[in-house]
Image (cartoon, rainbow, N blue to C red; front, side):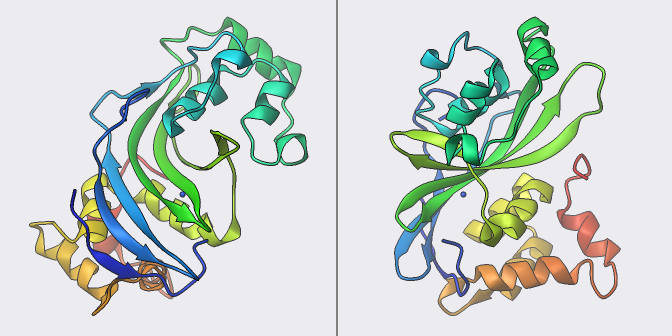
Length: 234
């Protein structure tokens, strides 16, 4: 497991399914704690499907199991269970949504997982997973799920301080994000980005956000966007 120190100057206080897995790792410093950030790229064709028949089966021990629980949920109580903050924070689903979940072909409607970052926020294990949605009759879409391990299970959540980071996780190619986080790429262009977002102490997430923003404003930098952006993402 590779470990490299980096500093977080702003308040970022995000197993193949069902199994423990070895992840490459870095070190994140934030206020007021130090924790480890890990990067993991899923093998091709790693899916999260609607495998659960009831909420009782959905233990959400791993972040990937939470995604399986989300796509399996057939009632509002289950949606609330998957959401940090419960009914107060959960999105309200119509019965027509649950009807589709109960009748859909589970092998044709699923999430395909791309990569994951894990780290602690205020001592709470946090993960951001990039995935693609495959649903019959709709276009393939990219997404990023932010989740935290609270009360013995992973739960879906959101936080303003993680919004830009989740977009970065969702839009970047896996090899680019890995090279930036772990500074282990053989591509000089990726290493040039890694150097720009690092200080003597290591990777600085505020600089990474600034770098990301500079590719879009004040002018769009097509060269850099083509280098880092997964063409399958929006």
